[in-house]
Length: 163
Image 1 (spheres, rainbow, N blue to C red):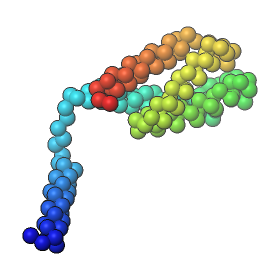
Image 2: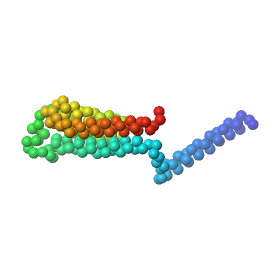
Image 3: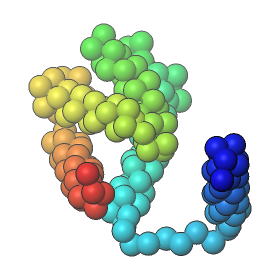
Image 4: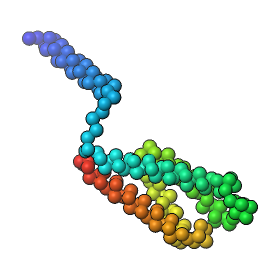
């Protein structure tokens, strides 16, 4: 066999392989029946948790925006009648909660980081600066439970994926 015919045979095999691979990939993309295995059960639970926390973050962010815009509260509780610390914290949470919600819904790493920032920020404000929001231990406990749940789910999801 000549060098030219051997090279042509190798090229033809490569083309055939590429066609088979492309056909398999297109069929898999079109298929509406995806086989879901239990191999990623913890990852699916983590994503579900992140989506639920995204909804909670949207509610919290909109609540803070409602405080800023005056949709909730009376004349005494108006945004401009509050202390500068309260105003600053409220605007901070109004923005960061909605940013975290987007990242959580998309299940991106930055979304989890922003959400963790909001959780820690709220706990610190409630514990270290009780004059701003009243120092509610219930809020701190809720944030701590959500943080623990996230860490447990993330750890279990990481264990099911081999390195």
